[in-house]
Length: 220
Image 1 (tube, rainbow, N blue to C red):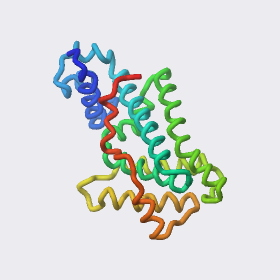
Image 2: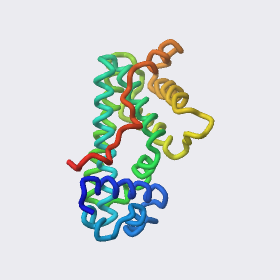
Image 3: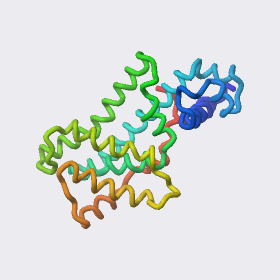
Image 4: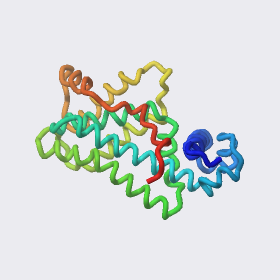
């Protein structure tokens, strides 16, 4: 199978398999079966499950960074609006893209040292997207935290955990989750929005994270 969609079929199968079994519990044969492909067809694209995991996570971070950069630009110049846009993106992405989120959160450290270093650089870049906005908010007097990087880690931890427990068929809608987490995270940063401001922040246009199909994109 050497068609243009071969990569996306295999990465989708790898995502599903790793999310269900974990990296250590999954085999390259499991991925091939999920993709309904022969092992030789899979090996054409990815010689090992390490390679498949690496490309999954690399693509996920690249897609997130690109989208987060765009929503910040769309939010205007106010650091509160920019930070709110990133928080909303994080919540929405983790809620709508739980399988790849679980793989990223749980299995990134299963990569070998060389591959993990590439991902680690992407992790730093993805954290900087949020941390830089928090630091700008501190400079502007909008936020009150002693360490913007540490505060950013706290916000990311809160939002990333959504992928591990949230269920779209549960009692909380994505919209309710987004609003509540936005309020919690802004309070953590030392800014307590009233209902009017929270409504305004929630009404801002936001790129639709659930349509972010990074798997379909070719490798850089």
